[in-house]
Image (tube, rainbow, N blue to C red):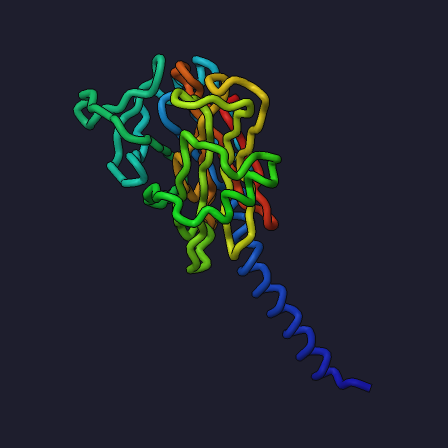
Length: 259
């Protein structure tokens, strides 16, 4: 029969185990529950994050509470610093003297109780068409299809020290050729496996489509894994569609959009 000393040792081991598990996972979960932020994407999209949920800001009263708040601002993935923002038909940026400053790049701005991080990236030409052809065939499209947009972005978005390739391919707005099918597809290649983010294939005229692009790779919830903002522009339309994707359990999930 085990002695009293053995029971005490086992009890201590169990307590230490639960303490370690709490500090590894419990503290992190508590921290995640407390995260709150406001995220501005370009001129026409504002989201808020609270209790692990995303919300789309649409009404004037909400914008009035955000006006003249100081946001941490990024342009094309690079930190610009802290600026005042004010919303009317779009977001306007002001310095500490409340003087308007020009802003021509891809804007992301936030304020909250934690730090949001962005990855810098560059668009690169696609030289190996093997994955492009696979995606076309998966969607019943010809491998000889013409494109109005085709490029890739290489980033380590999940922090595993390995670069993943994100592709954009589209034939939307074909001013120099005609097509019976309009397609716009965003996908990632990781370890030779294809993961789809955004895909839209329809039998419509090309000018009715929506041409996607990668707006930002952004760690919105301070967990070391970057979410992906895919934006999509429509022909002759000022406001673009913005979509926030998260990589969960081997697939991309749409968290929120501005639609």
